[in-house]
Image (tube, rainbow, N blue to C red; front, top):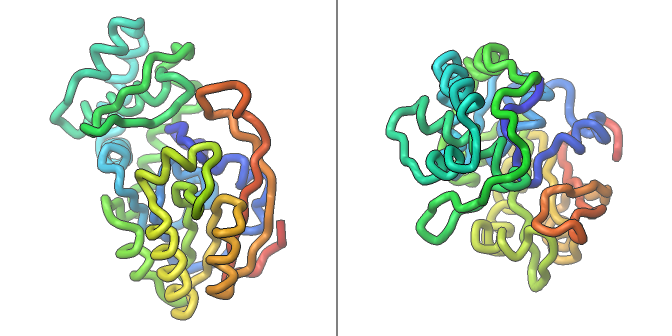
Length: 271
């Protein structure tokens, strides 16, 4: 199942290159940093807790789950009306309905510059218009996505609260914003404002507690000494992999990056 949002740091590359890393059997799927949901839509679990601190993001998922036909109708209208003036008019508006908020986010995500989600200090989306003009995509399967999300518990929540619910046989996939200790590259400088090094340490501790309760864990993170040391200290298994990043403001920084895959209590193949 193809995600309906393009998200910075999305994991389409991960499920294509390393599907054997993911467990094949688990009781419940838990994803505390939902984003575009590539791993969730790849696994299509029967039950799931899907969380993120981005309220607009979770609103879009809830609207697709509960009122996908109405969202699709608005997107078809936006597809007909799309131009520069329309883009900035929608970017500046503040819908109050669930459907309006979701349609706005999906529209901006598909037509903004390089699919980047970024807000200013006032929390306002401020990415300029991009070159892509298609608002309705051939891959759209909102009915199928709504059916899949019907059994999902969607939350605006801090990651630690969600991870602390995991028990024996549950599977946690954690893909946080990448920050490292005393180092910047890619999105790391920007992400430090969203997810600090203290958050990284809090995440590692929460995942370690979940592992001790019998949860299966796969996480991804920046391949940096501070990150590796953090998870080694907590007894996790680590492997370094490479991926290509196409989401960047400059062509020079769209290149191969190394990431680390962190695992515990999982079978499956090593990357």
